[in-house]
Length: 91
Image (cartoon, rainbow, N blue to C red; front, side, top):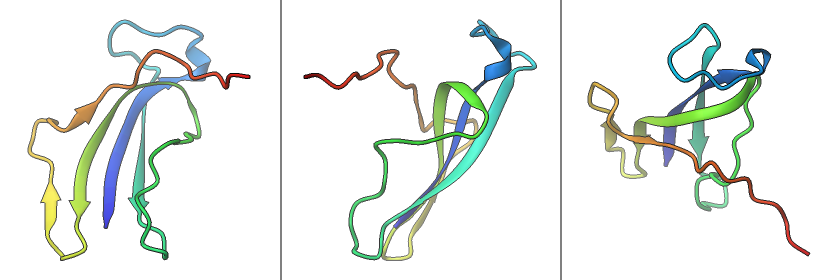
């Protein structure tokens, strides 16, 4: 199984979080695949190259183990917005 996603966010050079679309907007594409041990898809953490903040994540395609492929209908309808909370390890 694999999933293609697009992460939408803003550049770290902005030093602000824009309230609307701006020239600081970025996207990065990822393909998440099952490991060889047939474990679940990685999904706890995503590291981006140039983004300081992630605004939303779009799932564009999912390929299931039986070969069936799901494509996102247009406009983007399969999205998720990350929580604004930062998890800090407790002692």
